[in-house]
Length: 186
Image 1 (cartoon, helix red, strand yellow):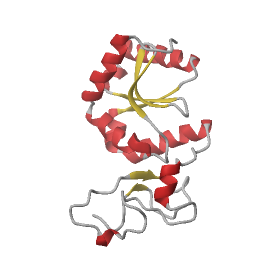
Image 2: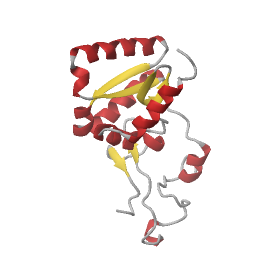
Image 3: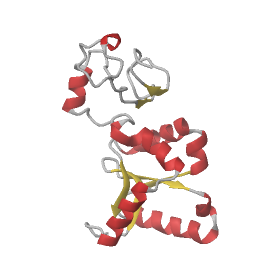
Image 4: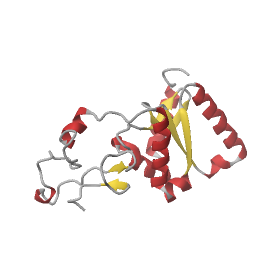
């Protein structure tokens, strides 16, 4: 596969980023900004002659969200050939349907983590993330302020904290599975 995509592929990727389906937008909300256990995903990422819906470079994993047209004969065959070509280049492809994403986003994110766990160990947190966490043994702070700030003391117009997907099987924190937000803010 060529290392640099053609200009028309780059333009197609830019346009696809602006016209995401409902399922793609929902899944992107769970993958963006290192929300899925610290893994970085790219949306509508061009590789060779393809534009991948979501791509994690660390795990060489492409996540494709397929609509109803992908279940038809010719499109299904094209998807199989595309997956084979990507596999030959060392990229694993995980296909999920729009319906799966819309009805069970948590299950889809859990399945992505399972596939990623087969290939690599979890990535080390970035130094910035460790700073905001307050170190390895300190409690986690998910606000955009330093850990010393107490959420109840923040002004009412303070922006909402970022959300991250937490899977208790891969996390050392005793929390319920699902979206985690700062407990002091609603």
